[in-house]
Length: 195
Image 1 (tube, helix red, strand yellow):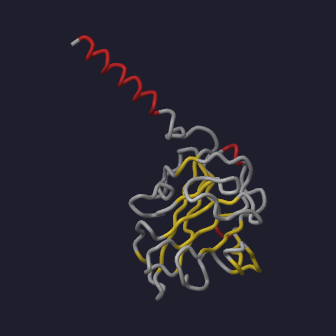
Image 2 (image 1 turned 120 degrees about the vertical axis):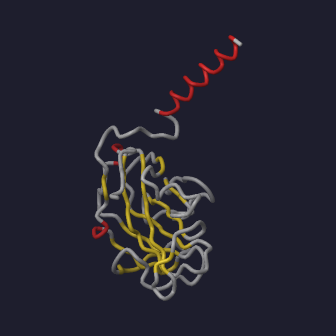
Image 3 (image 1 turned 90 degrees about the vertical axis):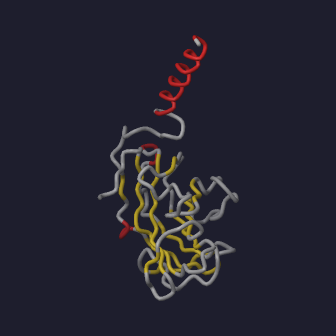
């Protein structure tokens, strides 16, 4: 019985230690959350997505033409030197989804994903899962049951420099025609969306 008590004590210590580290990312220390002013972002026209070729600029933070196929996307360029990436350990991204009539639809898995890009002139896609050299954040199911990045806690980031933009893509839900970036917040686990 004594051994069982020791085992329980060790499990409790490990559990308490895990609360402040690992996937947690801190509970509010460091810099104040940086809520990006979406009006400072510039939508870039995609001339050829497969070749990662951009054209001029387009208005707003929502695709102007309906997505015609899965994985079609839009690029939103950040203002220069938007953040000091060393200050932030977490990222929250919220998307809104609309059907072909422009009616908002409830977010679910397989509707949309996003990729943070260090440079718009580099690879937009990265590995099939997880980060790559130019794609430090790649998250799927935004807004759905499986999504994490859309929650206040967001996902862990470890940016080595300021990113240049975000690549937002329609996933596999046939009802999604338009996607709008609704929220973009860099933080340290100390962000709570207004109730």
